[in-house]
Image (cartoon, rainbow, N blue to C red; front, side, top):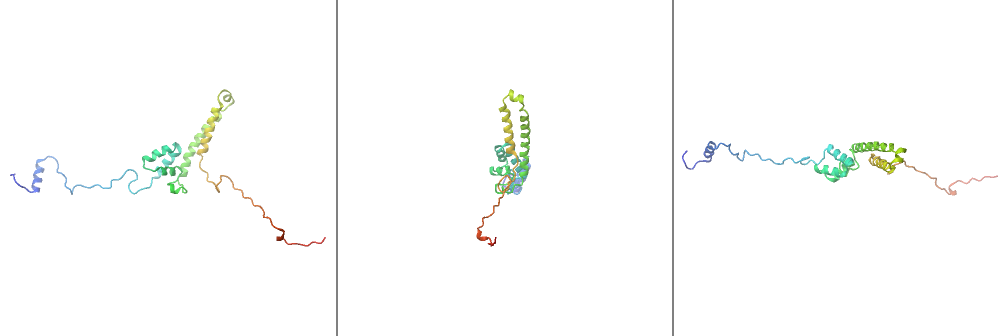
Amino acid sequence: MPMGIVSDSDFDKELENVSPCPPMPTSKDIGIITNLPSKGRGDNNIEVPESLRKLIGDESVVSGRASALELADRFGVSPSSVSAYSQGAHSTSTYDDRPDVGYINGAKLRIAKKARKRLMISLNALTEEKINSSKAKDIAGVAKDMSAIIKNMEPDVPKINGAGGPTFIFYSPQMRSEKVFDIVQVKE
């Protein structure tokens, strides 16, 4: 090809013949990627999956709040939501409606069951020989600790009228004056 001024199409054809690499894409061949999906729940989806709510609530009951906060932080869940999930609620605004309370109570019952086993072992270890030969305070301390764990891990019992036990209502008769009654004259 002689030297001189050539059109762009001729130049591109000759350039393709000379270079072994593929041609550069033009602006119409390039696709623009927008709105990449974000980690976690995705855009405009604010609901935490039920399985994650239960997992965080279980972690809070079993391993403590600090462990649950660390787990929630990895999934982008707020600390206030962790508080709600540990109570069986879905959010702090719906504490009255607690659909996951059964799952949370199940986790508490598992812990209480283990504590009961340890309590029975420690109570059975309090024999006369052990009391005489070892420190009974140590064995009694284990029993006391296990009973405290059981008490703390028992599921919440719904309270009636704000109290945990039965409600007694006493009615007392009203005092009436003599003027209210009819007077009957009796002859003797």
